[in-house]
Length: 143
Image 1 (cartoon, rainbow, N blue to C red):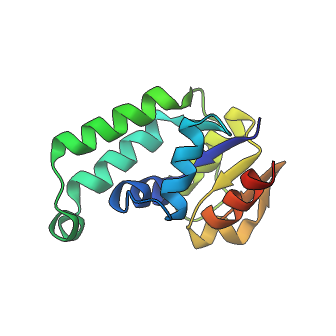
Image 2: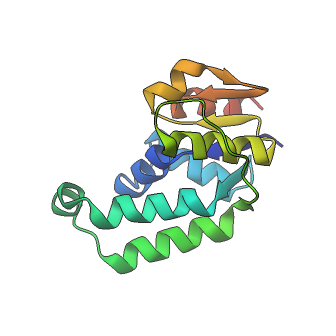
């Protein structure tokens, strides 16, 4: 079974547009159906909660409760394999992106899924393919 880290951009997108047809939403559905192993770390879950709880423009546009965020993050925690003992990396300019990469390395992930341009520009880090949600969906559908 493929092993993939979904980064904050993808997880936030899945929450905000929880509708069939969206790539991020569909990836989470595939994870819940065990078509791939979802790999996350506490720093990723913390960042997802932080983004959803502290960005006023998101709260105004999408109108969700703190409880909905807590339920979502707890659901991710239950569905994912949580990775710890992250290596210290300094690969990209944003420290948060290095934590995403470190999660993928510590988990021995096959894929890192993101919409972040800095990460996508890497295309590959060590043995980890870095793909957009649409590209990872294509890979998983082909299996």
